[in-house]
Length: 105
Image (cartoon, rainbow, N blue to C red; front, top):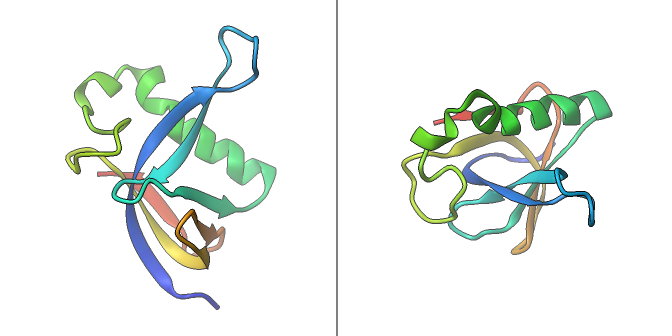
């Protein structure tokens, strides 16, 4: 069992499929360090996370969440807490289990 940790993240948007104009990918990065944030889980877990991360753009609330897509600033963040599997300077990976939680703050 890994240790429990809570971090503040931002949403990074990137080109999803090269050459496909409307293709956009999203991923989490830690606010302070910029390191990649991953969560091990099933395809269904990944789909739920993707829906969560794209909700601000889809629902139009991104305009009032000014720091959500920026590394700097802690006014708008995605808080992730849970059991940590991997913790390196480039990556933090959480175990997808009952201890995992994420939400906007």
